[in-house]
Image 1 (cartoon, rainbow, N blue to C red):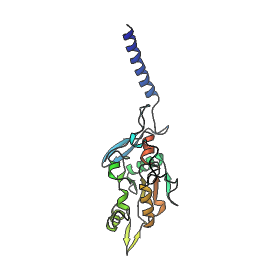
Image 2 (image 1 turned 180 degrees about the vertical axis):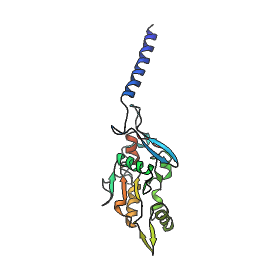
Image 3 (image 1 turned 45 degrees about the horizontal axis):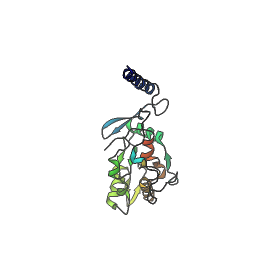
Image 4 (image 1 turned 90 degrees about the vertical axis):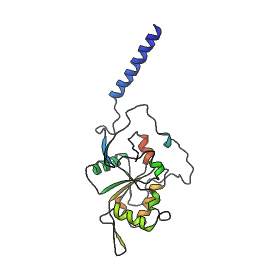
Length: 214
């Protein structure tokens, strides 16, 4: 009889927890539950993990990575480059999903990190492809022209039709997207067409937002 009572109590407790979870949804904002993103031709629903007991991915749980190279980045990476947060990234993804092709969300990490999960709707442009010392001028020029919308005229870059680039990497201790931003600025890319999601994957994971794999 005692075992039966304990079993009933456990079932009631689990049901009560499930009902509490339903009564207390985990929205993005009070009036926004999800955002749709087009990822490689597939629509992915971005939402926050509804499990109230969920914890961060162990890949992003470390607090004391050695510096250098994993040093804390400043809040403002360069004059004119806007630092943005999760809601602004989601706004950009909504615009992209609605057909705005003037914006690109760029994951600046190397493929080994991207394979563990990325923001839906982003494309992967590893920081090494834009790094002058690790890449080559033809590869960089091809990226600027075919993906970012820049044009080369008489040996000079014209960025008047260039796209707005939103770059991120692993978090505020990651230097991959900052390196890309600084390279783009040196090449003449307009600062107002560069946005930096400083929190990156660590902040995205911390608030339980959806990730996807390539």
